Length: 107
Image (tube, rainbow, N blue to C red; front, side, top):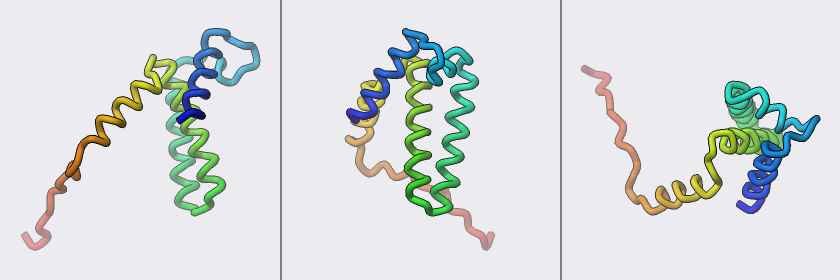
């Protein structure tokens, strides 16, 4: 998680510094709609890369998705610690497999 925390801090500092020519600053300037559009695009590109089975492409798209998700987190004042705390709560749960409704195709 160190890379993610470091990237988060870099994104946070870019939002505060508003460096000219920074893609991160561009995203903050355009606002949440643009940020969410990028999260959606990168998510779709990751799915396609995984479906194509090319590991290097999939890894690259995962990194793009993580970056844009971190930008969204900074914009929404969600910290890495917030996410870690939720992950920790979820890790404590056992037997949480959701029961799926079985449809009887004969009826």
